[in-house]
Image (cartoon, rainbow, N blue to C red; front, side, top):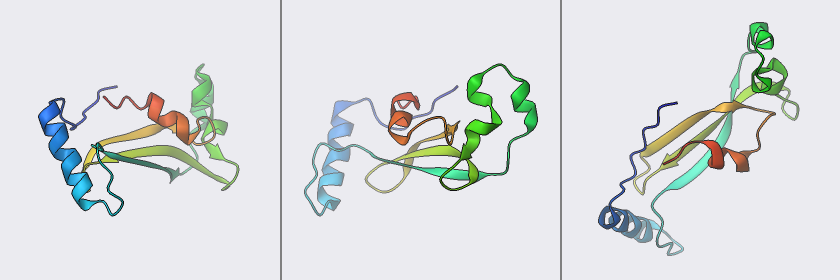
Length: 109
């Protein structure tokens, strides 16, 4: 999977972004360069052809969220201090992966 992350690798630019967060923060957060959140995106039932694939992750049942009785995918978004998206990840079936595991596996560089 190709990754496009718009967070700067340069320490000086990271410090500038952290200063923007600190200025806008009611609680005085410092050393913050991005804000990350996630949600489930509801989808129509995936094709039963997924069942034919050998990968366990692709099972149609894995896309079903039992709590909401819907099919879904995880979405993770990362924003800068101005609320602009610098990274977006969409993947992982609703019932197969917990939200806290998405960040470890979303290829955010």
